[in-house]
Image: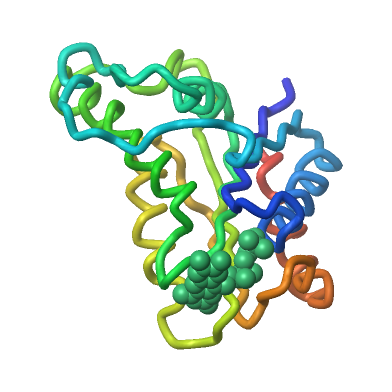
Amino acid sequence: MKLNCLALSCSPRKNGNTALLARQALAAAQAAGCRTELLHLADYRYAPCLACDGCFAGGRCVVEDDAGLIFEKILAADRLILAAPVFFMGICAQAKMLIDRAQQFWAEKYILKKEVIPHKKTRPARRGILLSCGGAALPGTFDGVVQVVRPFFKMLEIELVATLCYAGVDRAGEILKNPKALEEVYKAAQTLSVP
Ligand SMILES: Cc1cc2nc3c(=O)[nH]c(=O)nc-3n(C[C@H](O)[C@H](O)[C@H](O)COP(=O)(O)O)c2cc1C
């Protein structure tokens, strides 16, 4: 059975550095036998969390927009590649807005005491990787990104098996001049095909 591998490309630049890394990772996962899909958050429209606590009643967000479609795909995936750039020392807003909307899963799990992952017992354990790029090369550049993605993966019961972050990469496409990065990402993503 082929594993479903979804890449979430979070940058507004659909041909930017993190999108290129997401494509590289998907190419590896596909070559290793996964069914793959690339999703650009830039193609979707969703609001930030309103903190209305509406999800506390049924475990679903009361705001009807594209976040629901994206979460359906995330829940169906066996493997998740999250690719997001650093903006102002944190994860880009497109990613953070979606991650905040995962509050509905927090409500489902901790308030309603329900299972978040459909058919969990009959599915392989979920795993994923984080890919990021930042233009600067300052200490701690990626700390904010990692700190946000860790609880997001935990909430969605995805084991974070690799975090690959590249500093000093700024102009769109610049990551292509870094063959070591492309190789590292390829190798890490190959392992996603292992059940
Ligand atoms: C609004 C904005 C804020 C940014 N802030 C940072 C930052 O704090 N630290 C950093 O290293 N790079 C920063 N960058 C640079 C991006 O992280 C860098 O260009 C990265 O390669 C973009 O990835 P992408 O091509 O996938 O969008 C910022 C870029 C933008 C547009």
